[in-house]
Length: 384
Image 1 (tube, rainbow, N blue to C red):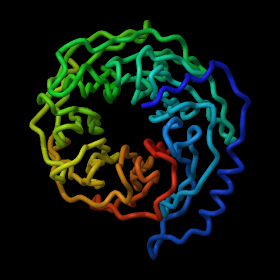
Image 2: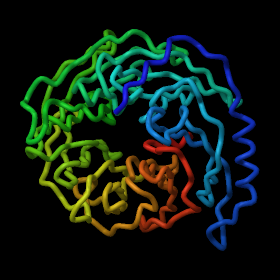
Image 3: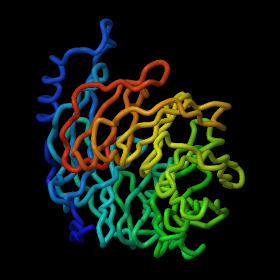
Image 4: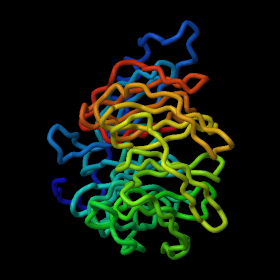
């Protein structure tokens, strides 16, 4: 990871995305449909994360459009003035997107998205750590949570009514337990709020632990209330909740497993089960996503470059491996579902592409359109 200076605070001029998005929509209007009886076609937007400091990387947050019927993706302009935006998260209002700056001097940036297609970079704040890889917005819309991978810490920033960032209100470093096998220290990889909004969970790959915190929504501070220990050396990377809120699924990067966890909303306790197969003998699982109805889950497997399909059973308590399909690109780093769970998108880092798949009634994945060129694609965020 190369160090890149943090963007300066302030408000660069408003720039228009509308022309590029309309041009993309014109291309999509002539795209062939995938079925004999196509669903009504509409055009929606995608935001794309990248590394601006990497060879062949992007120049900011990419924008694109996709056709909801065919899955075909078309280019839009770039939101400039944002460094190394490797992970993106949308405010519940849909009016602001947040990006990590994954670099030595870790930072988070807020960008306002206007209905007319214009944008405004609202400013950047330091996270207090290095190498942030994940961020999420608390359901209240008042707090931004971020995870500093390199320094093994999690941070909290307040959000103003216009979506802009305030000064950091808390920073918690994972000082125990000791690092797992082969690890030099803690590596916080993700921070997310439970579906009921009662707890914040931080996944640490370096300590093989998921930490549960209670967020003081007045002061913006975190208090630890529980820990879940994973198998030593498993390297938990990304946690995804089932819509029912009683179970969650962990992708464990280092031992190539998925883990079903029971979750108690009252105490915030996470109880991991045994590691399960990813459908591949080798590889580095990246992330799981679950359809909106809670019926199917999908896992991105880096290395074998595949997507695993699971049936979700017993109200979320079990995952049954169904099959794997090619991801259509190299090193699928992140997955995202369209708002209606009809399409699955994969950001393929090493091939610099985004691939789209239609999701069948049985959860099966069918490629939709050609791989879309996106420089060092490490995150894809479909907008509502």
